[in-house]
Image 1 (tube, chains in turn blue, orange):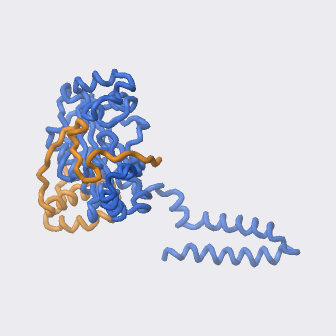
Image 2 (cartoon, chains in turn yellow, purple):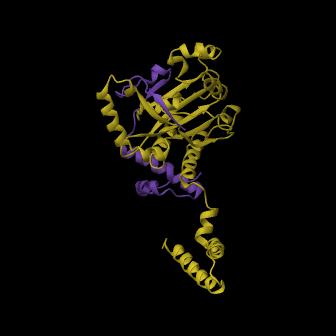
Image 3 (cartoon, helix red, strand yellow):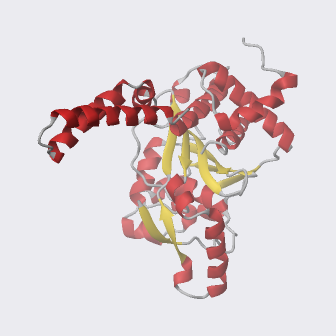
Length: 270
Length: 74
């Protein structure tokens, strides 16, 4: 059935070739090719299947992820009064790029890792490829433009959540911690000297950006159902800090439950 | 897009402690596989009813709702 449009296109192309070929004397390949392409393009555009393809959603996968994230957002927001605090609630879905997972399958990466483990203490053994994670969806009552921060495995809350790959835990971050706020005023050199407990393994510039946008964040890894590979990370964040907020993400059972269900549903889609 | 970066301490051995990076850890008691699948089914069924869109990969979960059925719309 899917080959039908291609068959029709082929027939039309042959018909065009015959009709054009009969009219063009002597035969000029360039003119013939130009006419054939014009006829082909006009015919292809008329086909329903092609029209549906052109006007349809660009990325069905992305649309599905957004649909699930929206549902989780509705679950969290239902039976709550819309306050300024709730306007700052956002759900983000981050995914490991599909091309990376196809190009370097998890089984291969695990084998390489076990070989590398045996190669210790080789200097090269501690380095690895880190693709930037894709922001698959962002849902909120008032969403902002992307921060431009390129999260990777091991970088920040999302990156550590992926590297940890523990499906039984939720990771939390409270940006309002006094030592963190003090550290944000450090110079780049001072920041580089600080312990990852303070820096969350982020650069100073990225930390400052995130601190302006988020007060508390809770994250959960999404694991592939068959291999257990960490394929993504879901976060629920609130602009209001934990201390000032009525909604404490780490204590709220609705938030935790929605996050868990969303991460499991996304395992089939990401 | 791609960078070559140093692994986190303990990553190669599969021992990463998020608390070493200043994150809080909440250990969850996950429900049984059957219960979790039912929650996912309910979650997807409501999303499907709301949007009218279907996700083929999640359709098999809906079989679990044949007994309990969808929650009544409020």
